[in-house]
Every structure is written in structure tokens, then in C-alpha cells.
Length: 68
Length: 253
Image (cartoon, rainbow over all chains, first blue to last red):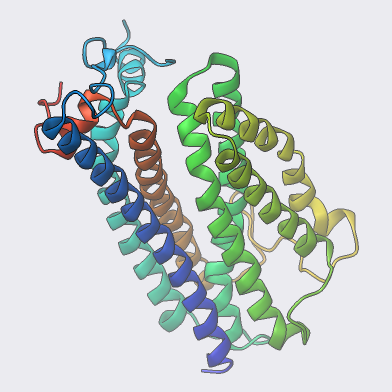
């Protein structure tokens, strides 16, 4: 194959950028769930000093709210 | 109420959207990956080498879909941002802001693969050609939207400010599209047409179509996953997020 180095480099860029995008999403979701777990654990161990209790989301009652 | 309208209203609910995104993002990612692998196999091993460019033209199979995605994602981002500004729909703010890093990624791929192709074909990594320069400005616009969104603490105010930048930036899209027509350009003109006859040989077109479909499916997966992450970030502290994180999730309605 002619220009093999260039073809490999271009496809490597494609794979790296899409791979980074995939990993970044997974990390963000994991981080947010970890934060939520920590917050829940803090509230369970120190209910008075752990800040406000989790808010009950009105969305769980009403399915039609779009624009809070 | 019309079932589609009811479903749309339900999707606006953060816990419902979380379940929807968690369910469908892996499918879109997986399907997108399979289709792209099929397209890449065709692009690398099935289609014949170009009589002028040799095998370097195989870079086109990732360059062109990425370039189209860079424009499509920006347009979609501005569309969501406009809806969010007019009707104050939070999910549209989230979706608009989730578009920005994905679109920036596709723009980066476009510039990098174009540059890699340009070195053996044009003899230079970069030229201040209208198409290349406007695509570079598009990358800066994406970075501007991402930067603005992260610079303001209030998520809703940040999304509105960044969304406005996205809407204004839409004027760049036709300039990129027609830059090869309006100015003398080193970049080649339009060779592939979705509607009408392409100047590319039909035997070379099929892998390109697979790559275009694959990148679209991958984008859907990435959009759902990124929007889910931002949704969880905004909703952190709500009971449903705590229940989800600790595994005490209420059953889906």
C-alpha cells in the first residue's frame, strides 16, 4: 500500500479522538454517580450536618415537566 | 394527548431521560462501531487505489464523514440552543451543550486527517486556504461554546450564553460549505453528492456511505452519554440521583 504511514496516522487520529470521546463520557457519568453515592453516605452517617436532604424531584410525580 | 407529544414531555423529565439515555446509548455506540468497522474494512481492503492519489485517498473515508459531522453537529447544537432559549426547555440546553465536545472532536479529526492527507498530495501540512481556515474557525467556535459553558457557575445561565454563541456561529456553516465555490481554493470542490451524481466512481462510494451512517450512530450514542452525564451533574442532590447511585432506584414508569 502506498502512503501507508499517512493512512495509518489518519486512522489512528480517528480512533484516538472517538476513543477519548467514549472514555470521557464514561468517566463523567462514573464521577457524577460517585459524587451522589458520597453525598448519600454523608447524609446517612451525619443526617444533621450533611447539608440539605436530597430534594424529592417533582418529575418523579409528574411526567410532563420540560422546563424547570 | 398524542402519544408522541406525551413521550416528548416524558423525555423532558430528568429521571426518565436518564433511563432512556442509559438504555439506548450503548446500542447506538455498538451499532455505530459495527457499521464503522464494516465501512473501514471496505475503505482499506476492498476499494481499489485511486489512479492519481494512490492509497492516500483512503483517508477520505474518515475525513469526509467527520467534516460532514462537524457541520451537522454545529447546526444541531444551534437548533437545540434556539429551542432552549425560546421555550426554556432544560433538556434542550443539556443536549445543545452535549453536542459541543463531540462536534469539536469531529472538527479536530477533519483538520488532522486533512492535514495528513495534504502533506503527500499538496506537499504541505497546512495552507491558509478558505476551506481549511473556515473549518479551523469552526473548531474555535466549538471551543468557545465549551469554554463559555464551563466558565459560568449557574448551569442554566451558562447554557443560555453558550447557546447564543452557537446560534450566532451558524452563519459560518454556509461559508464553510460554499468556500470552495466562492473563492479560489486549493481544496477540491464537491465530488460527493447525496442527491445527484457524484464524480466519484460508484465502486468507491459504498464504504463512504457506511462510514457516514456509522459516524451518525456513534454521534447518537455520544450525545446520549454526554447529556446523561450533564443531566446527573445538574441533578446531583436530587433523591432520584441518590437512589440511582446507591442502587435503590425506583422502577421505571
